[in-house]
Length: 56
Ligand SMILES: [Zn+2]
Image (cartoon, rainbow, N blue to C red; front, side, top):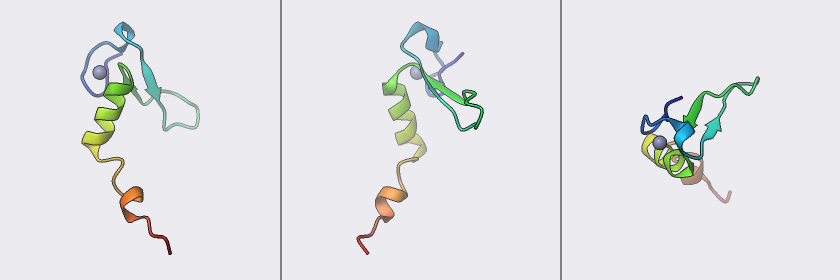
C-alpha cells in the first residue's frame, strides 16, 4: 500500500495504520510516525479541540 502522505510503499518502512472503521479495516497508512504527524499537521486535524478548549 502507498503512504497516505508521501505515496511511498509503506512496507519499505515502519508502517503505521489508522482506521476509522468499526471493523478495524485500515483507512489510511503511513511509512512511519513522521509521515503520520506531517499529514496531521498539514490536514489541520489537530486544530479545533486544542484551540477551543476553555477552562470554564
Ligand atoms: Zn510516507
